[in-house]
Amino acid sequence: MTAQPEAFHDVTPDPPVRGYLHRSLTPTAAGLVLVHGAGSNAQAPLLVALGEKFSTAGITVLRCDLPYRQLRPYGPPRPGDATRDRQGIEHALTALRQIITGRLFVGGQSYGGRQASMLCAEKPGLVEGLLLLSYPLHPPGKPQQLRTQHLPKLSTPALFVQGTGDPFGSIEEIESALKLIPGKTEFIPVEAAGHDLNFKKGKTSAAGAQLVESILSRFKAFFGGPPSAS
Image (cartoon, rainbow, N blue to C red; front, side, top):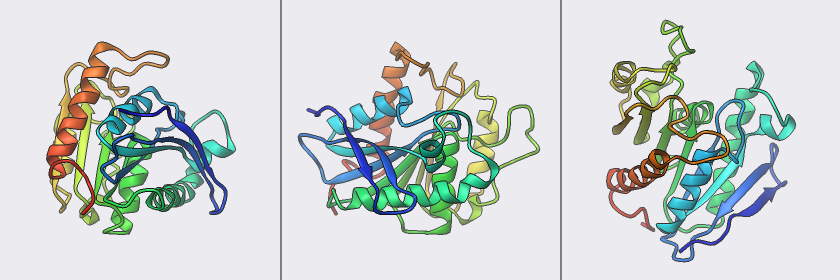
């Protein structure tokens, strides 16, 4: 069972936290912060679907607008936004920790996932695990511009989900990058999916719905069963 998501806004920190909270009616005490990709927001179809599905499993989910999106309703982040966006993710984790009593996780789609992984590389032990969706390993068509500098410092367990047709990183490139990570990792390749993982704006495909079910199952298995209180 799950309740309707509720608007969430914490203006105490700078940058503030803004998003939507999915409370479970049968909580396990675990929590997951989800952040969006460049050019998107907390209403991204994949994040909404994950929030709904994970909360049915007893996991409280907070999907957030990154600080750059709170300032500008449209467009991608600017080069100088990344540090503040990572601060925003940390503030969202702090806010969710006030609500839950158990283990805390963070995840993100594309740019959001990259910033979450960089934050965890900077601050080991901040969360129990990472969920990285469509990791932007390099700009499309520029495989030489790898975004892997922080990966050798990433000790947080990480579950990667990548489409086989994602121009931001092929399956082979992702598998190679995972070898740089000292922490425990697992990889879910998604056949015939691009960077959106079959989640188009305004609708969820049957393949997308099946993927969310699979991500929840693999998430629970990878992080040691139902992610409940320690």
